[in-house]
Length: 126
Image 1 (cartoon, rainbow, N blue to C red):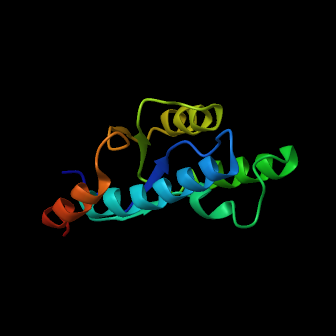
Image 2 (image 1 turned 30 degrees about the vertical axis):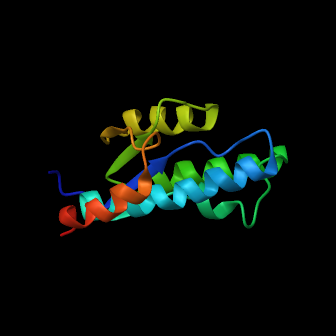
Image 3 (image 1 turned 90 degrees about the horizontal axis):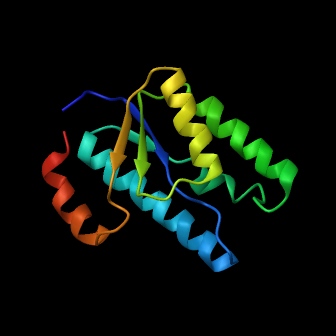
């Protein structure tokens, strides 16, 4: 398994409702934990925390969050694309990862029982 120090979590944030956004934030935090355990590294999802300071529905604040995420991505060793849905924000992250030549890992963990994965991920921890 590759030796990554930091993996950027690329997953959807936006949703039709406030509840949907909160659900996506919770999922992103869970993805960080799962990917971190599987790869034995720090997994980061800026969109899981920026929503506490910035409102994705306000264009200027959304743009600030996107710029922060892209800047942070340049410090990472890989990008984990979670699931099959790719939003416009995710597409920008994926394109930057390819441009700066870091691996894009397609992680299909969004469609399974994450609680089972977390229990099983301990065997991957370093």
